[in-house]
Image (cartoon, rainbow, N blue to C red; front, side, top):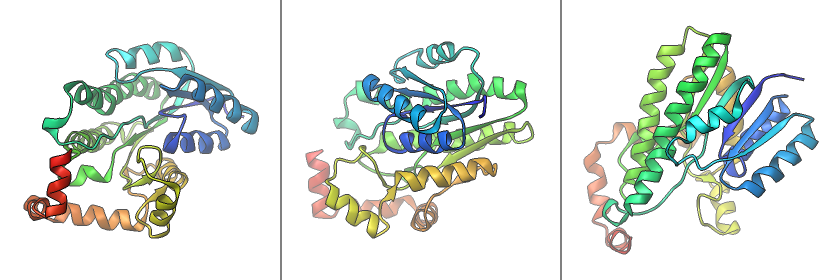
Length: 263
């Protein structure tokens, strides 16, 4: 039985839940952070019973000012060896149709809080001479994505931040891994079960289990980046190579224009 803990944000569903399951299977005790108190407690109880690990569910709104400091204080002296910054939100909307409050929440959740959590927990990891940080970015970090400009920009921030942090910590025993999944079968997308199954079968949507497994494998190997799935790697290369102006003709397609006007 390990004494170390893995802290996962957004741990009660989707990829976060899979991270929690797989880390528990490795013997890590868990700190499960989420904004669904009842579900968080249920997940904590189930994982503790199934894997025989200690679990600490913590309710937190990570988009609130000061959330990172409050979470760090709640964790206290527990030795966090793995930090998985996974919590996120996706909102399809052009910038001018997005409420300012939603923009503030996305930026805080994807940029401010993960940065501060890394600052706080990485210092402890450095003192121990070991640790792992996993930052959930997105394939959208590699090219402009109209209708989710705010989301894609925050994921691009995480891409740059993770690269720089990896350089700073690479000789310290603390690894930093950024994960860039494409579409994942999680509650983030409001799709029916048949559509999700079809998309998974075609390889256009990844399973949360596969993403977590490949990300943790990359983490243990000390890799800087993880692009889970062959099509994800192809998409990232295309996004990187294609010029920005290639998006403009797509936005002129009548069906796309109607969607943009509706959003």
